Length: 149
Image (cartoon, rainbow, N blue to C red):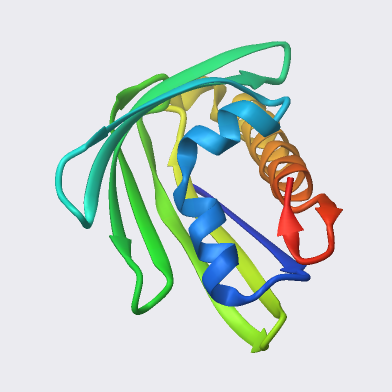
């Protein structure tokens, strides 16, 4: 089981940072790594989302259950089917100041092929790190002061 943690400071309020990362369809519009995302709202605090992303030299697909906690500024996700054997984690937004926040993405994953784990999982770790870092940069590239693209 591998674990990835990515943190990024963004020049927007924590509320706006949370709103931005909670809108998964926006990832599809603004993030080069994302091929498609389909979101089905289950309730005010839950959704099912199906992701297709560029992954190293190919693509990775999965469906996850998402649990949103606006008070805690967290989104927990858990893959229910997909290319990895296990993939789960959390998005967390932390208030730094009135116009600054830190976003932390943490994920644990297992590709499910034990004999190739030493080869595949470091590649997966690099791809996830690169994709999430790029996504956060693309989502929070400012077109106007204080507003995401």
